[in-house]
Length: 372
Image (cartoon, rainbow, N blue to C red; front, top):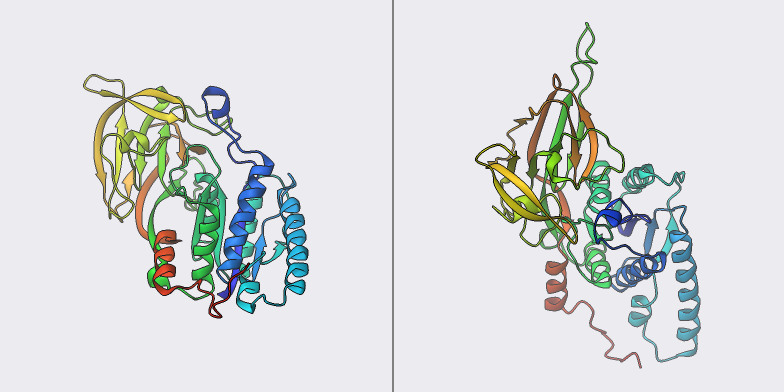
């Protein structure tokens, strides 16, 4: 890995799906996103990162960030040049890292995230900062699983990225990426769901076709609504089952079905799954499937999902939603399994990094001079 080099993948259009229409879900302006990215960049610089590779986009986000970074660097140069008392340590911690755009074709689709993740892997960055919803984080992990990530939520029903101040996300990421905090302290292992689909209809006489494989970081849902459309799942009467790696009572979205009935922690080795049905014996639970909308869900059974044990998915013709979005259509004759994979990828533990930073006084000005 290239020490002191970090990737940044910011989804410029997260939080703009149908849930803005059917419920009181919010959104972010382009200026909001620029502000968040700049805060993260300032934290990365303060923690010792010297170069950031950012995903380009069609909305102007990356261009606006680049412009602000250039403006900030010019202003800092003038300030330091005229301020003879400025210390080298202070100079190194102010401003922004060198910002470069990843050389990928811009499509304005999720292919940009996929290509950016692969390019970050090629460049052997030490970590990737991801801004987006659960779906954006899923794609980054899927295509660059060996690289630790730090997430910031700019989506809707986000269960995966924790809510942390952006500049601290940047600082914690930098302290790991620059080698100041070891991986044993900085990194946390995470579970994921491995989906495997063997399509029977497309199997030739000479043998089966290669299976389709995909992942989910938080939840996989089976829905009878096979029309992909806007992808987002928000109608409870179409749900047949929900499988989760973890679920908290503090989460919204599909995982809240389990989070408000039998929660399971990120750090637990197991997961959970619920079978949903309106048949006799089902118990109804009002859950926040969408921010601002509590909807009744009929829970038939609740069970433990053990690690490394594939579970057959037999719900007939259906759609499979991964982290809240319909991604695959399956037929009744297809062989479909879900498997909980422990220790599948790593995230940067911001709190652990900040505690280590405080204990070791990593931000102390060694020369003892103030910045005033």
